[in-house]
Image (tube, rainbow, N blue to C red):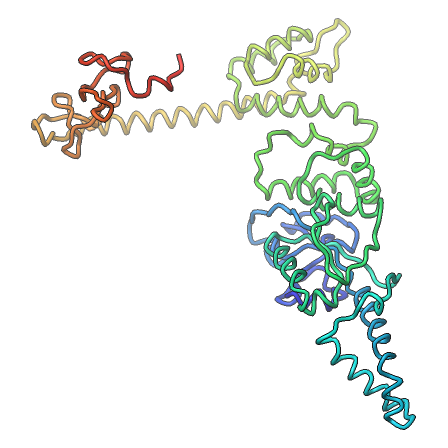
Amino acid sequence: RVQVLADGPLQGAEASTSADRPFYSLSTFRVRPEQPLLPVDKTLWLSDNFFRPSWVGTGDRRLKSAFVVLEWHPELSKDRQKRGMQTRMRRFFAAELAAAGGNPTEAAVKALAKARDSLKSEPLTAEEIPAESENGQQHLVVLTLAEAETLRWIVRSKAHPVARDVGFALRTVSGRPLDASPGYVLQRKGLEDDRLLCVLRLFNSDMFFQDDQINALELQLKDVPLQLRQVWFEECLRLRRRRARYLWMDTPVAKLFTPQEEWSALRSQALLKALRQSLRERARLEDVEALGQLDWGPDALRNHLLRMRLGFAASDLQEAISALPVGRQGAIPAATVAGALELPQALSALRELEGLRAARRVQEEAERLEKASRVWQCQNCTFMNSALSSTCAVCDFGWTGQRECPSDKWCCTASTGGCTFFNPKLLFYCEVCGRARPDLASMAF
């Protein structure tokens, strides 16, 4: 698979991979047939160890996080190699021309053969290879950590033909250089480089970008509709299965999916979305029902939401409520509150959740009654105990025939100098010997 660095990408192979073609164009990346493509720069490539095109439609697979990028210029390397060989040939040509009696064709053939043989023991030097060339195109490839480590080993073992003949460099997704082969030529600079690396960070589901990076992404994605950008990003985020601590709507990346005139309202919209989610998962049914029954003043609505203990600070709730339109009398209509907070959906979700809890309680009670109808005989004292008890009610021996501490007591352990008496958990010191319970130091009062 390393030989692909010397061969370069094949035309028309952007959307497929094989054993000897491990890269495909990022512009063809999708995880489901219905997912839209993101038409990014054709020089951005993806290793099939992240996601293979043959997996599309076969079910979800976890998408790895990207850390290392390969900057690779196969055509430029070939051009430099060709010019270096021409320089090496000229070094042998004069002697071979004299030996061939002035026959230039024979001399050129022998000089070329000698130049090739000399590369085995004497690689091309910096003087023989042209310092700069405008031919060829550079590519950026997202690699896995294992692939990056393999390339670093190739760079360090300078005798490897790929390291000697092909120009490539490794860097982090943020742009910091890691390593480079001897044939690498720094050709891409400035804003263009930032745009492409920011696209790779977007693939990596990064959410926090600086203003200049957002501008660079806007330039790179200027022809891509906002909705398409959002769907593509959310699909990558979904496959990474992150339970994000922050909603992406409350991060700088949201600017890529929102018209610029709406950027000032991003914070309040993100808080409203989080509030809707919290109402469905944490609220009580009667509190949500009360929200849709009357008109609310902004302060009264904020105080009611605070009493519901949904996990929001008063300032966050105030900012979320400020996005709701106020009526002529200074109150927010009940219909507006119900629509903005999606109260019908929240009520439906809470009723379904309550039904599941009730079913779980019924099942647990049935299991408890079924277990209570069974008994086990203590091997020590032969007392018949309920199956709900793990220790004997008379002698404290367990099912295993060994003396065990009941779940509602603690043992004054002999290993700490105790008397082995079982004390109620309400006591902090042994009733018999007065020793402190072993976990007293870690208890919170």
